[in-house]
Length: 447
Image (cartoon, rainbow, N blue to C red; front, side, top):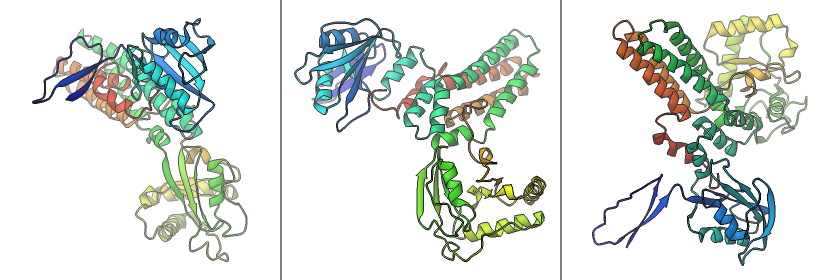
């Protein structure tokens, strides 16, 4: 016997070919059926309270079957659940909820037996199925409650490890990024309408839109770096301020700070609040010689690039990561602004030295230039490589408009059409089906 489980959205007919020598049983799962899942995250062990979520047209049936009643909308009610493995629960009823459907939440005792009993009771009801990963959010997307950028923001919020990641995810989940792309789509639709009506004065509007998209793309991948995090090693001479920098990044005393050289002689590893993972290892040759003086920049700015290049080579003698380095010139509060400008000019003129950042761990000057910055300040940055790919395709399509606008207006309009399609794929307004599985695959059960 061969068992096949079929899942279709609003399916009317499902056909299946019988396999040779085997009986075929097809268990049909309708997307407009209701789903349930443990949404509070604990998969093992015990906790005080667990939350089981139900969404779909059978939500009211689930509440009535387990509690013998239906409370007022969006109010909590304490009832006994009619199942032998649990005694009581607090539940809430949400007509037309986050998912765009009727929904209910059961707040129950968090013991494994209680959770298992409630899930078994729900699974025994007609029209109720265990939810797949991301299915609640998928339903919210289909109901028009969220666009794809907001869906991705929710996914990022689930996986956020740092405060900056949380703030960026919340901003995207609130629709800030989606509104930018939607505004560009509206502007591009207007341009396309004028071109198709043979009104030939949209060049300035198209060019401005292309400039806006290109500026958005030239963000040095700030949002993507903040979202995924970066592994960073802090290396340098003794008493240069490595421990002070680590403590400033992590916003806590992760390493001992002392004027005595070589204080930190162990590997210290922490996840920091800016979305970076910083490691400081001062068990280096200079650290083994506490009498060695800390390296200082030459007093002549023109000598600084050669000095830094040699110093970097000595630290990364057996490493291939030189191009991935950022030089942090600490204790910048001890030199004048004019001296800093002269050093910066010399570094820019040299060209073969990695990017340098002036910083003072004492005054915190230069910290914002080093970090990704506050994600709530300025325009939101794109956070997914998927966004970048579609935006780049949109720019290429706008260039097609300029290529053909004086030759063939139909092909020029097609360029605008392709640009509009690429923008729509970011928010899910067009051509969403082929990218849904990629977006939802990392969601956890119950979300």
